[in-house]
Image (cartoon, rainbow, N blue to C red; front, top):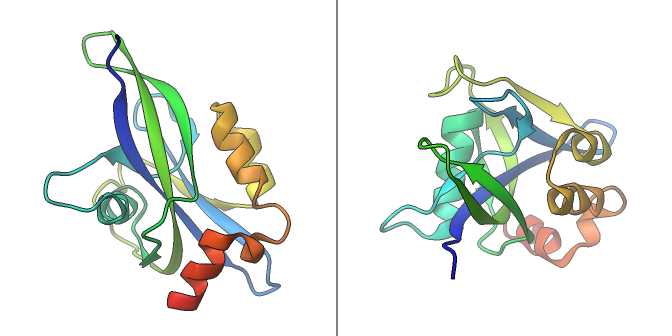
Length: 152
């Protein structure tokens, strides 16, 4: 039995002035590829609260995060010792109401808003790409997002 890492991620989103959904992606610190803010679960924090902290630290995004995951994806994380750990990442959608100009990892990452389709083309994980593509049309009809929008 191999170990599997469990991680959480925030999917920061907002609707532009034309009513089109945009998702906020950040670059990874090591390879510079586009990813969503993610990290390990944190002791004493609910998973969505940990995802909210990652969004703030990695992207400077503040807003309302759902307590319900919108989906999961898997990837292989390369550890410091060179080994690879398969990880399952639970993704929590977040409606961004403020982007900070100064945030913890601003010197280590870039951030950029993308359409879901454009973001899907830039990520390497097929399941994450599929998740982003599922937001391409009528994202407000998805149950998790609909509930989140009602609550925020």
